[in-house]
Amino acid sequence: MKVGLFFGSFNPMHIGHKVIASYLAEFTDIEKVMLVVSPQNPFKAKKTLLHQHHRLMIIKSEIENNNKLLVSDIEFSMPQPSYTIDTLVRLKEKNPDDEYVIIIGSDNLRNLHKWKNYSQIISDFKIYVYPRNGFDNYTEDENIYVIKDVPQMEVSASFIRNSIKLGKDVSYLVPENAWKYIDEMNFYR
Image 1 (spheres, rainbow, N blue to C red):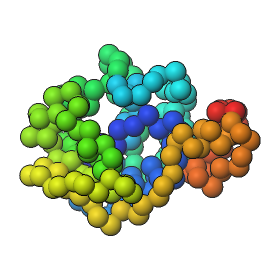
Image 2: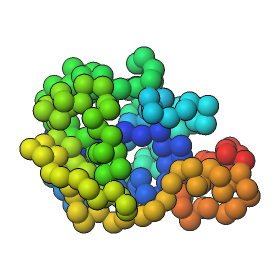
Image 3: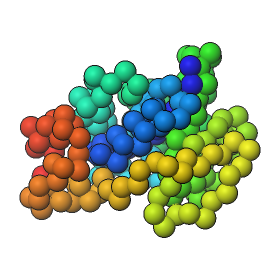
Image 4: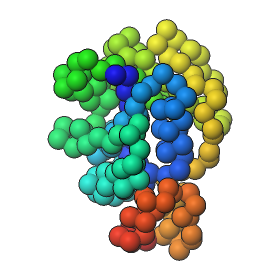
């Protein structure tokens, strides 16, 4: 099976995440998209993160009825911060018959050279890149493919967190079940 790996903090999951994951599962050769919840991204401060269990549960609540979207806590039992190459190795060990494709935004592509063992990642795995406004200076490589028709949404998790803290209604920026979980738990207030 061809599985797209969409790594992220998902702090919280928002409609942009769901649109990208759903689009790639429906309109590319990827059969399923796995949202991999990262306990700690090496490029982000951990203090701003909602506990990993809740970030996982927010996604689970949203995708439970979609058989093309999965969520993974594989990095929860791995050393932190989380490094993509280590997760890829573990996933391949667990599921050697699956083909894994990395899904990243064009904003992350410009920092790919900073990733641990990035040359091994580029040589061993395909990377599907979705465009982000202001980050269009990328070139396709042997294993890097730009998915040009992905709907673009300028939504950020930090905007959602800050807006909730200010008492603003951002329910339209978070998928329905995910919003219900966040609202009921009083997260980000």
